[in-house]
Image 1 (cartoon, helix red, strand yellow):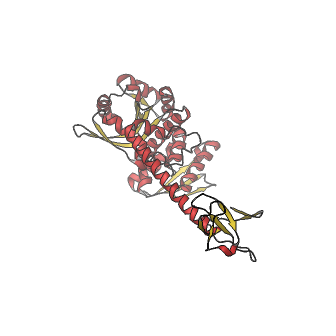
Image 2: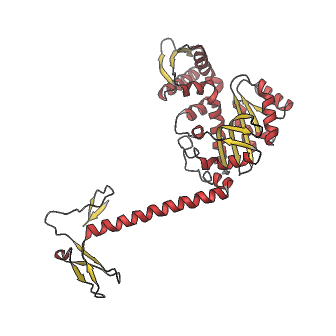
Image 3: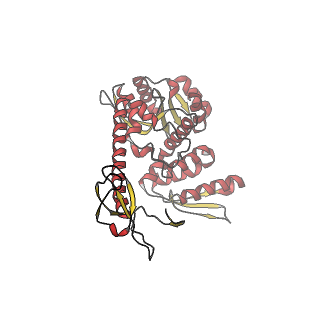
Length: 359
């Protein structure tokens, strides 16, 4: 905003030759020799006059034209400073990748974790890549997998926090996807009034966020009816990716709230030294050295236990920090499997409690 004799004038980022009708143009002199600046009569614009301080011949400019030239130089120099600062930061990042990767996440108190692409960068993943390199493994980050600017993370947290109540909705959607049946219904009459309202509200949010193509509630029959969204990303979400989002967001929030330095990844592809391929669902590197690995399963997981055991040993991760989160497990089953194998098993309800002990 520009101020002209006490009046506010709108500014759009460009200095214009603004004149009030009846006003005269303004002239300015700046001596290139001694630096003296002075206002002169308007009729001197475009002429050369002697500087009153040192006598040097100086050209007189219209004040607005002079200011425009000064600002052009200022913004050019400002852009150069930004470029040099970015180049210096990049060099520092190469020198200390682990520290640089975590520094971006060091002050997140004001950040909306459910609406940011801050973590979707190579620099944020640099410490993780370096950590795996030290274990003869090549890590290939999936940057978009940690971009929370969409709605998948929001719905996943709501679903995971209330899984026992909402699982019927997810099971019906997942079954419809597998069988190519586009419509489903949920009988809310069998639930308490409070539970029915919560399920109905959840389904409405699925529609609001376009995770359902259609949804309506038949009040007389107390039945919710929905049409499944056919988009590939939505199909993957209900097929199991929602649990990855849930684990990622819960650990992300805990690390932020505990003020821990961290780098984070989801759907991290690994190529081992013998060219074996793996994908890690959720991976965090805490304080540049302490890994937390979470494998998320909404279906059968038992055939993969041996694979998880082998990967944990090859990477040298403590059994408490290599977690298999499976929605099909009860708390008792999870505890029993954790005692049988050198892995930690949890269900969705027990995940946060275990992660809290690690941080």
